[in-house]
Length: 388
Ligand SMILES: Cc1cc2nc3c(=O)[nH]c(=O)nc-3n(C[C@H](O)[C@H](O)[C@H](O)COP(=O)(O)O)c2cc1C
Image (cartoon, rainbow, N blue to C red; front, side):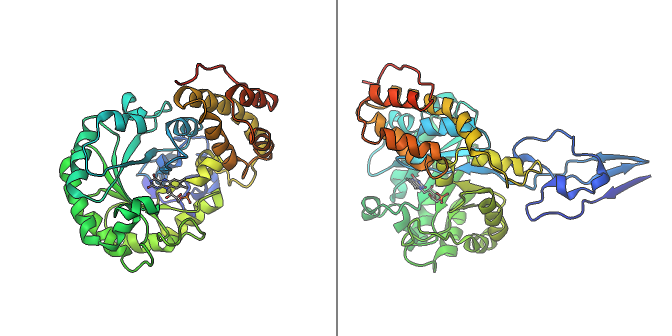
């Protein structure tokens, strides 16, 4: 006898372990640790036996957001080593009028020297920001000679200096220009390299959000990330995840939801409200480096309710040391303590220990005194030759 038995009680995000009947006896099956690659398992009955059958992914990707001045290659390296990310995007590379030399792309994305992947193997797409279709296309072509894991366009940056020149979020007032930019860049990017865009919902209101998404799709982007706020809303909560759902209905390309995901609960609500399988996390990932891993653990039946921050802090200490080591190698000595403080400032949202460490190093300017203080707080500091 051969009979299909479909899982019952599927949760909104469709974690398979819960979806199987309790007597299915399949919970010991090895699963990919990343929920993005976990599968809903129907049970195939053959005689008295039951077999799990993979039918396709029901969970989407988890992406690390681009964050200029915050998530550079060093932080991407550390965060992706903790696990959970399917991809990352660099800070934007500003394109304005000239053809950038390859070294500019390599500086923002040193991962280009390693098949465009972080040390942990996470693919890193390079983001371009500009408003001139021809110039963007020429730079995208130049970038593509370096074989990036993806080319992404920024239509969300709210910075006045960028917006004054018509770049970033200001372009959302002009869907037709969005389409022309996407079309021009599409022609410059080989089909083998994913070409994507990241947008906000508008400049002052959301009236053109659907037009913008459709213009980008018409221009040839293969996927969209939607930061679910307008430029005017800045980073003020809430993120309007329901608008991601509206955009998903308006286009046929995959849409990733982004904005205000700080916890596993936020992640589940974001997926449920937006209907998007794919989620991008930004500040939450910096403040809580274990968030992506905890999101992955949801897929193995852990509901994420219990979080042992003290144990996580201990696990983070060697990574903090490595971060500090790498910063000293890459950043001028006078800026290195500032980079560390920037991350600690975010970490103190999650860890009381980070608060104490931040307060202790806040006034320090020199590398040696900062290293000593880190050691006093249990960070196993390595000595590094400083950048010139
Ligand atoms: C410091 C900072 C820098 C950012 N830089 C970029 C950027 O270079 N490109 C981009 O598309 N978005 C950038 N963003 C926006 C984030 O990618 C993300 O869309 C936003 O923070 C919302 O997600 P979150 O609530 O998870 O942080 C930046 C955000 C922050 C806080």
